[in-house]
Image 1: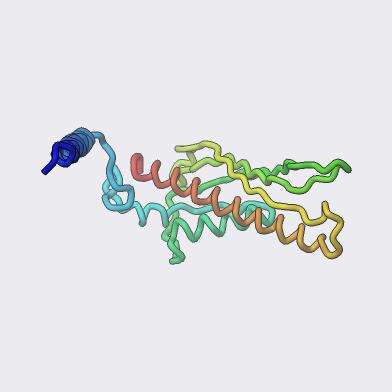
Image 2 (image 1 turned 30 degrees about the horizontal axis):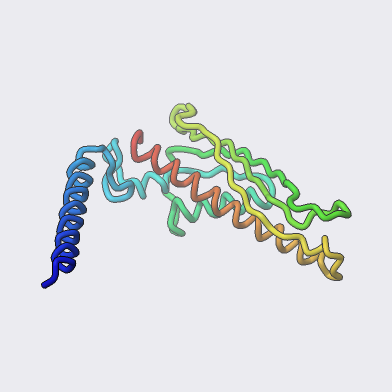
Length: 188
């Protein structure tokens, strides 16, 4: 065995030992950090989180995008199953805005970014008190075929805008569901 081979084997052993020490520190250092699985254990009040999510009534939201957001939230909180008698109501005020991107020399945009801004509040129905509130944002970009002067591009632009609304609503629903679950697991 040459000196070079011995040196390489020694480096591997030291590197392996170093990684084992780091893994040990991470495992034992985070043992008392307070993190716990959100859906695997009862909430602070002793309730099952999945059951508590089904007890949130999601108020109607005007506009097509608002309805899509509400449907995504309903599916996300109930798993597609039925709801239980509500304990909370989630009120959401939704605002849509659009920004143009990459404008041609003629001044026509070649794409847009849809931004959804949601202000929400969770109301406890027993006393009509707001127990949790906040705001979340979601964005989705899409291309405009009409900027190139293509015939039939109005349909393509409309379909792209609807697709962006669906994507932004889905992302926003996931964010709101996570924030709602975090609150309910901690304070319900």
